[in-house]
Image 1: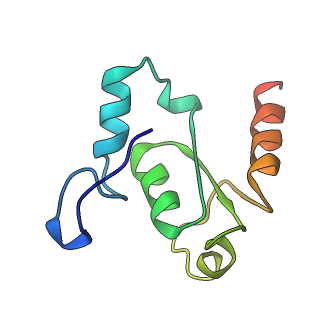
Image 2 (image 1 turned 45 degrees about the vertical axis):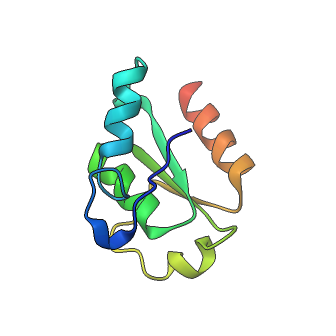
Image 3 (image 1 turned 60 degrees about the vertical axis):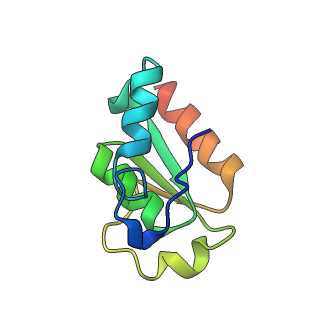
Length: 95
């Protein structure tokens, strides 16, 4: 798990949509960003995914339904829940 302990006003590198958490994960693990996905329920999750060059999925649970109306850049997939996101990713990887 990676999380940002900073307030939005602190301007840190790890707060979404900045790349600090992605960079930390890549430093700790061998991650193929071209085949990775960012799944979340907020605009910032989708923006982080785009900033990192990841595929993105917006789940409509949690904040997702409200945030879907305000996205500036659409995600690769908009799904009802996390299970549906996993199914889409698994189907894409099986092709």
